[in-house]
Image (tube, rainbow, N blue to C red; front, side):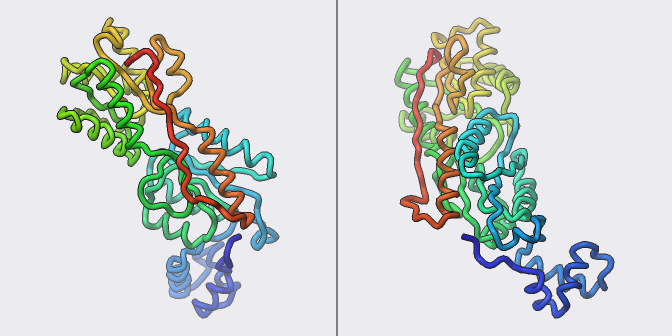
Length: 332
């Protein structure tokens, strides 16, 4: 259950003005004396107040709405997560408000503030690293929070996902062992924390065998086209590379297509592996090796955790590790 929500009267009391003055300032700041407006604005900033867009009748009741933030509508893995969330919410008469922030933390901050203004009952975040202001608003809202896809580092409230670093370590170790590869290169994409975790897992596997890590990191949103470009750059800079581990399947599929166009035999000449185990990758010829992640189940469990906490049900765990699978496919 949510705690007491800061009201207009609370702000008015702190500012030494009437509730009507605060309301007028929120609607039309220019209609309030500058000094008074500055005092009201300062107090609102200090207490992280967000004007509520929900109807007045819902201010002290459940809205039966959950907020969901995703970094990209173009990434299939988030479609799978949303499907998992909807599989739970639809059966409990809950609606979801979905916001996309394009892997930009400032945009995520704006989206969080916007979602909180609708008096949502809980919120699902696609990652665990946010601006300080985002964290302040989320903590002030005192509502259930679930962070997805990562179980490393601190959490705001609850989390469900898997160990990205260990998953990368296991896949790269498999690549090294299967064909005695010695020069595997890491292809990254957007320089986010999960990409860094996978890179560290790759480094762990390489250095354990006394091998030098190699990385190409464009700091760009992933796509198959980007994978084609990265594979071309990789083999231009390192023509003796005998394997590539990619931060996701989009990059890996692009790498595989580039090899096919250049008639490089996969896996005989070069091994390729991706991350997330998308169905389209498994249907390629040859079938793409990948780390299969339980995206639908992550979404389903996240929604269930939120609803349980909203209903004041005791949770056995605030952290749920759903693990992963190493899929060898035909490219190792």
